[in-house]
Image (cartoon, rainbow, N blue to C red; front, side):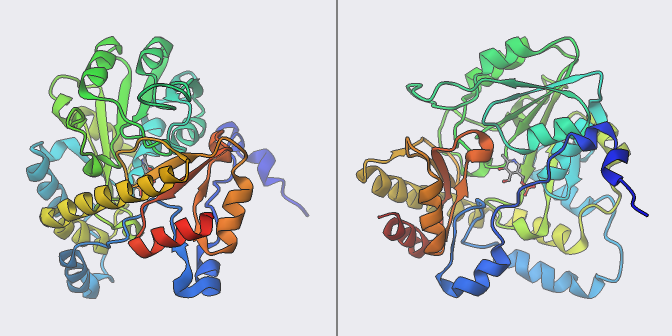
Length: 368
Ligand SMILES: Cc1ncc(COP(=O)(O)O)c(C=O)c1O
């Protein structure tokens, strides 16, 4: 007897494609050992604060217990750090979970969701999973003077319809590394109807050094329809533990709470994130180191006449102006893992994370 599960899946699920997790990294670690340069997932190779590791050790004997379903200690620490109320914070198993949760709570088949071409990959997935209609807005052109492939906020505002429940924007954006400044965001928000939620994904915010770009958290008191998402996966270097958070109006957080799985953030992750947050000196070191290393890497790549797009993140996008698949393959065979961009509609580009100096040198050697 066979069971045609695919035929029974609901329409929203049937519309999904299986997530492409990239290369089989556990197998590659076995094959290349210490010679592997993992530059495909925008991790922070400096690793987390030692305080986070100590906190994990201390929390280990408690793993037989369920974690705090409210994550109260982490929420209190975040509230103090961000100068918001704990009722404004929703914790997630990574910010990925929160991006999905927002669409599930607020959108359905009778609504639409707006996001940019070349925006973060989870935005269309969250839209499809909610059964909502995707409105994908063309990005700024490739030859744009300052922000090639960046979000076109004017066009995004114009694309919002009466049935648009959510707009996703990432600042800075992955995979392009592009960003928009405070003035651009404010004029965008002024054009968004109060009935549309604007999700501002700030996964890379801690890396931003551009003075005209500040966190959208400052806008929350004026815009009850804004949700800011952040993560401990990048600058805090806790990607393996899966902790993210959303900051919103308390009323929005209360809705998210209805569908949030009660124990979505595990006990070790809660302890580690709370300790990591308290070590802002470590975050500052990560930011400074990333900036110096990224600029070193970008300069070395530009010296080879490669087009490196501007970035405020811990990765760069390179436009090879020809099919980049053979280049990616050649790097792969030399144990240098980067992220191909065909799935994003940018087959001429590769996204390369800032690695350790040794990894970056290996990349430059392998690119020859
Ligand atoms: C723009 C952006 N948002 C969100 C995420 C999700 O991060 P996490 O689920 O690890 O918090 C990522 C991860 O790469 C990202 O690049």
